[in-house]
Length: 135
Length: 137
Image (cartoon, rainbow over all chains, first blue to last red; front, side, top):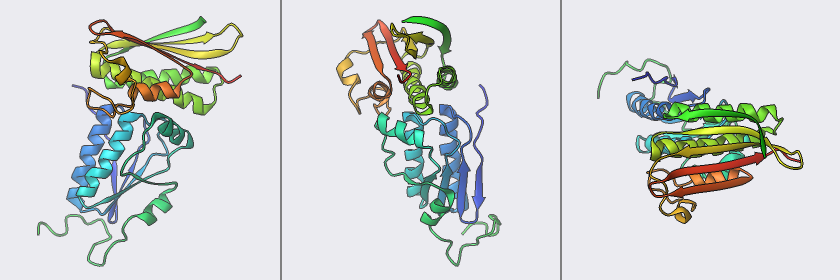
């Protein structure tokens, strides 16, 4: 069994940030989907920002993975915004017939962050995730 | 179409799918193909190479630089497997039809991304998909 390279997931206040910088093979995409679901549950993050400015190709598999991530995040009470899609990737997606159902997109990280929920008063904007253990 | 160069990539895993699309892109770059066309071609290859791993387990992708009678250059890709073949080709070329649990956009999507598309298949006989992307005149 070869090891799957994992895409890092960063916690930024009440948001999770993922920046995909490599051409992912399928197992890597699936690992990201699982890791992200776990991190959302673990951190109680309200928003997920996925930066795909480094992605040169999105085929139907990767496209479906992005839709699935948005769907999984949604049922875990988090919103997802995909940012930084390259123009050629957008052209390819439309030609392919991929509509990325359920995925919200923004051109830049700033605009994407503005689309996600703001931190609420009772949420600790810092990174001390383990401050309260359990309910 | 006389080939100028041929590259053969064995397709056995999802990592090989990535290799195939990246090699195709690298060859398209040598033709000064516009970056949009490079991406369309590479994505089409990704779709047909993934069909090999999904349905036939293994096969190969051959990428050739070709030129037509008028000297126009292009990239030709032949994806070949000895898998189960496709029983209902017409449906397999329809958006949204799948027997493999995907989105059903692989073949019809790949066809829209390239200039020429041909598929030879029969149940039990495997599948050969040929596609060509030409440089713009």
